[in-house]
Length: 167
Image 1 (cartoon, rainbow, N blue to C red):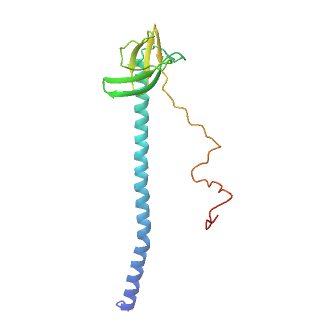
Image 2 (image 1 turned 90 degrees about the vertical axis):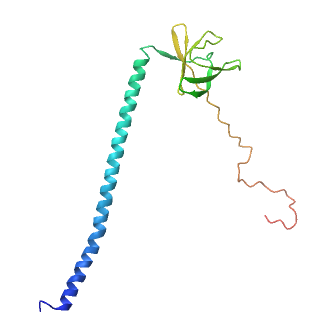
Image 3 (image 1 turned 180 degrees about the horizontal axis):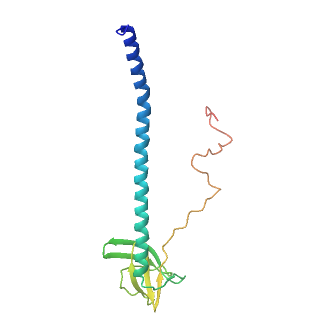
């Protein structure tokens, strides 16, 4: 009876079934472990990015040298855009009278302000001992006109529609 071929085939089939059943669980655990490692790596990356941002802010505060940058007032020009690379960065400013000029750090404006720095995120000018961060131009959003139909709206047909036209 130890060499019963039916018993050997049954045991072999049973072992192969258990191997097949265990394999998806093993694959699922391996997949979960891989996803966990990726999430931990992403968390570490975000921590490093937050640390870099905090250090950049600290450096920016130190570079300001304790000088207070005041907000712009109504008579100050508005930044329409900043262009350039490296040290050749220019800002396009618009004055209240509509005049538009391009300036770079060191330029003196017609109203007596001196351009201290031009960066993509801000333009700082100095008037006397006071430093001012100029406002960026923000275009007004077009207002919604309820009298005009929106795209895809069916317009009413005239009372006398052409023959053969189905409403």
